[in-house]
Image 1 (cartoon, rainbow, N blue to C red):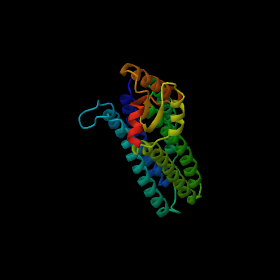
Image 2: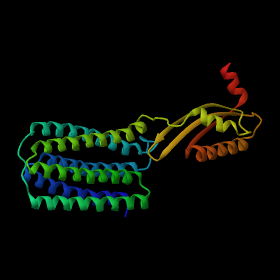
Image 3: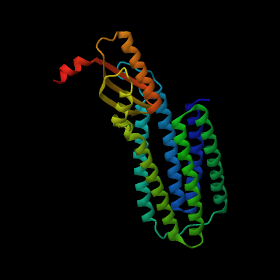
Image 4: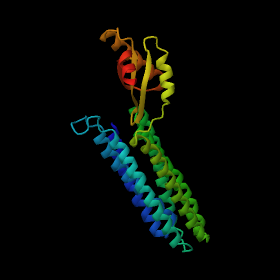
Length: 285
């Protein structure tokens, strides 16, 4: 089993759940259930985009993408967040237009919808198992998304049953709640993708400089830059050392700096540029 196969199986299950919910929603004339079906469809789109992004992200670096393709995964997440925002807005409009319309009881549909709830619970547990086994952040995030489907379906079932007993306006209220939940999911996805896409730095340069300056072999830290990447953090820095040191000694200093950054700041990819002290001083003056 690998990440792509897990996503493929999950996509097939989500497509089935989407079709079932849409059938029940149309049969019962429930805006809340239809909204939940649309939400499930976005899960299918999410699985497709995640599968494609994983395929591209795992591609080796080439002449056009010399730093690799890892950011394609975050582009897919950004695209999904945009899609979710549009879907949530459309659901709000649809819920408003259907306000007060009669909602029908459908016990067979209720049983079927409850069945999809159980399937989603089992799917969440299964995804989390493989996310931990494969050490995949993407599967872990997707499992959290599937868990939100469980909560959404519970809310939808409660709203549908109340509306079917004559409280028609509650169907619209619960449809709006589902829309707001989708907006929240979109916000969390934006929050995850944007910092990586814009090279956001979540490490304090002064803290890094302070740790590096503790090393006896380092004269000073001239510059520290870091950024988030899909699999952690990367950094590059310029330090000055005694100009009398050999190339081999300078290399050992760079190795020591890499170990410090990995241990203290969880920065696993580091580029250290070492300059002789007088060269920096002459340049600055």
